[in-house]
Length: 188
Image (cartoon, rainbow, N blue to C red; front, side):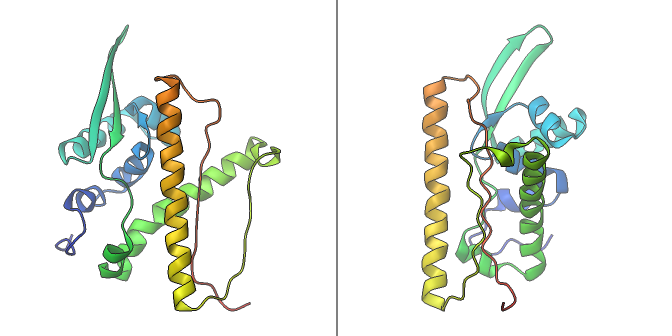
């Protein structure tokens, strides 16, 4: 991999050097989970997930949140310290190829989440939000919308943290996926 662009966290750059680590970092972002939970979610071999989780921990991308003793040994729970996110200033400094490297797994996971929601009937729930809006913005409006979308993500992460604190380690009632895409498109 080429040297990190100024401002891009080197821990994130190291995580991006392997396709499974990209997926793992996304899985550990904004929550705590064990390698076995993540292996199940990603349909990946537990040995591979455990190995790359350890690498992410060694790089400082994950923190060990807790270890729980059980019948089969100790189960470790991790949370991302370096989120699978690149801010706008850093994004603009990445090459187009590296931008795709960062974006492709996120888009693939959004599509997988939507497919799973469709297959399980979750898209028929009364209280979900699905929308697609065509826009034709000038530069100032594009910038304002970008800030607004970032704010939505930050607020969703805050709500997730508050919910986790109220649950005290118990699973939540309403697991969900929030996927936001705002991309240039061909004129309508």
